[in-house]
Image (cartoon, rainbow, N blue to C red; front, top):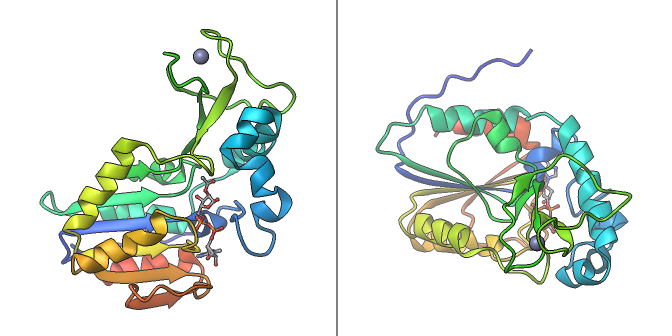
Length: 246
Ligand code: OAD
Ligand code: ZN
């Protein structure tokens, strides 16, 4: 059985954590790149691009609707839980922002509070027509057989994720930039560092004078010199131990 970690108060006061698909690997969700990665099975241009949604929404749903089924069956792992417990142990004057590229909602499920989902959340559906006033809603259906249609305007409905060729919305983007500006501890966990803008956040943190740490299964294929420390191994083992020392 999992032992509850007891976290002491951290000495840092402006903390930014960036997570990627590697954090959810321990929950049985595949990463995007690497052996058995999502993009090996589903070509990005066909399934993950904004143009693909415009031309063949059924393919977009095939990928992201399929992810919904897997996410519904997944549970947070020790890395998600450690981040939530660590955040809860911070004093009120300590600022903490968990920036995630993941669209699975597992951080919130584990109890994390101050989370920014820069790539959206696949468990929500919205209208593809930007001027439609349909509200975003939680949707557990996978829509694998039929593309859902907006009841208000008749446009195609889409999963609430940021596709290639799309920008991160203004509010999450601004929230991250503001947190990085005076950050004193930055930890990236389980990310290949190949997708911008998230791949550049460590440079912002380094510029602000933060301690910069990478936790990943393996070294980045294109190492980023802005990371001054690296701890290798599965996030659900390495991260709880690291957080206990910070
Ligand atoms: P990637 O799939 O690119 O990279 C996952 C990283 O996690 C790799 O560096 C692995 O070595 C590492 N990893 C795998 N298992 C791990 C484990 N158990 N513990 C720790 N690390 C592990 O995922 P991201 O960097 O998150 O965007 O990808 C960024 C974005 O590209 C995603 O958000 C997604 C994708 O296209 C969208 O879909 C919008
Ligand atoms: Zn609509």
